[in-house]
Length: 195
Length: 365
Image (tube, rainbow over all chains, first blue to last red; front, top):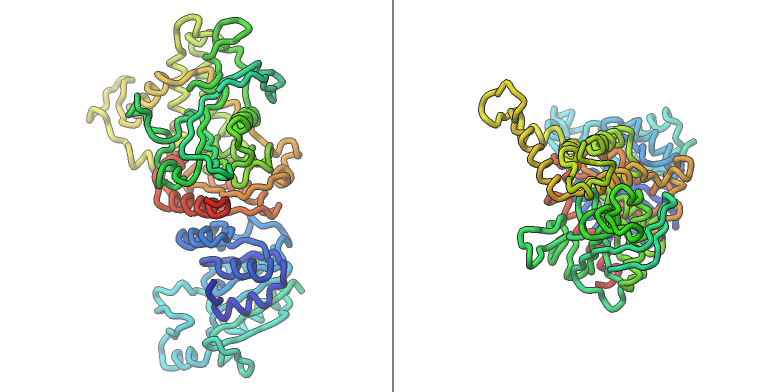
């Protein structure tokens, strides 16, 4: 198996061995395949796209075809050790509901999203245009990203919902950013539990 | 194949002896690990795929799914299709001779259930030397049999493919079934189920039963697309003959069906549908009911199926998730309603093909 993308690798490192994992918007299932093989984890992916569902089946990953915006009604309270939502939060209609659902279904959550507060994005807006970057490579009129946020915004929402942040990692192009992450990182990852 | 040992049924009745007709496709490997049982739904039979030399027009009912190079590839898997007891395509059923009377069973043929069918199928598997099926697969009522296999014989089935199915019928489903049964039972030619002796067939009842059933197999959109309000003759007739194309179509389907299907079988198979409810023994808790399963599941539903809608498949999936069973669930966006499970749809077939490739790897074929 090829190496995981750096952000998925960070997520995999946060997942405890043997955990029962739910990966929301699991794409081709590579994270689940990885943690199953390397960390003896079990679990499921949730994915809406037909082609991704097929790839999951091909990769031996158990996948449930569902629209996340319709909620996680199929999943029972506290039935997973870890629930992952990787680079999907910004495309959800009901962002707050999804976070609450993650907290309901999982003992811990791991969420990643592109940081809208990245300084180049800010510069782009000062210059008068919505940012288009490698992390958010869409024009404003055709973007699936309808709920972009900054690290601070996300932390405020987790506070409101009553989630306790256990760890944070911020990256720019695969390089970890520890100084001024709100300005300098393009991607943020959070691990949290219900406070 | 003849089975001399009596088959005790869920109803308490006993089938003293019975025959099962079956077809096989492909070759059982030396490890006997590549057998797949394909279960039929209401009106189908053991003739799953291909054609018979003497009947080149009679193509198997799931020929687009099963065969060499097809999603269920008979070059790799040994596929079995079996006609269930109570049906009318050669296995023991109401048309067969009751050994006790020397006359056709007719109304006296017992009501059989999904559980009973699985028992009969298991006996066939025993004779064929199949200890464990790589998969048991079916759509609709066939999916119920796949589910029941995972319950009756958890160790004898590696995968259950449950397509366009449900863990139990709704009141609406049962209502449709009963209208169909009433149509048959109230046909003057029914003779309390002993119509064989009178040399007649309750054709009118069977025809209406099929028409009702057929409506539930199609989606509203599909009917609108195929027929709309198109008129057969271009104008209203101001009488009660066929005006609309949809009437013509349903009557044709009803006629065709009443030519080959047995009314007593129709009654029994709809009852088998009505009675299927594995959660009932667990206070309605499907999670508990499925706790004893060991198989991996592929559950598939179709967005426009309103007979057994995706929500019904969600019930199965939820119960499997609660039990941490291996389950993959696909919701296929298809316009054709319940019938979609029998039709050629690229996404659906790619999914089943890929799933069987996974099974093939697992069982080493």
